[in-house]
Length: 186
Image 1 (cartoon, rainbow, N blue to C red):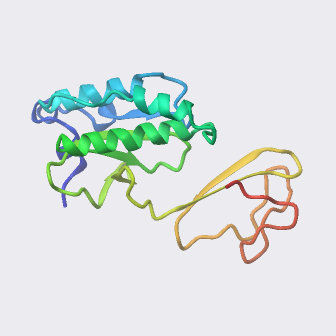
Image 2 (tube, rainbow, N blue to C red):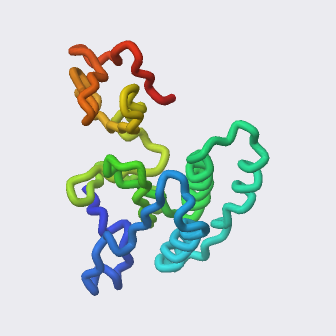
């Protein structure tokens, strides 16, 4: 099995003991906190591998998204990530995402050539190619009592049986089905 550091760090970075976390980019789910930061990060990592980062610009993706009447908050980052993943594949690289269970995208660029990265982890959390199945289900809802947004990332073998909100409101029955009045987000 390939180690993550072999894919995301240059030989010089590995020799200097550079930590994988130092070449990871974290982007909030809306993509609004650091405009242009994602593209700058990807271009810098590709250059570190000695590859010219052609096609990294996502302005065309942004313009097309802005013209889409169905665009919702949080859709644009996914479209940018899809675009960059395709560009990186053509450069012999792979966009990786660490499944941390948060609503942020924790991203790495790996020099993979023709290899498909699989079985990678970082600090005990799975790392997969962008677009690859995560094996988890994301469940979110607003509590009908206190309106707090609740989010769970569930492995296939887990359910939300008997789950309640912090305010005490029961949300799911013993079989993991939402109780009446509980509406899951799409």
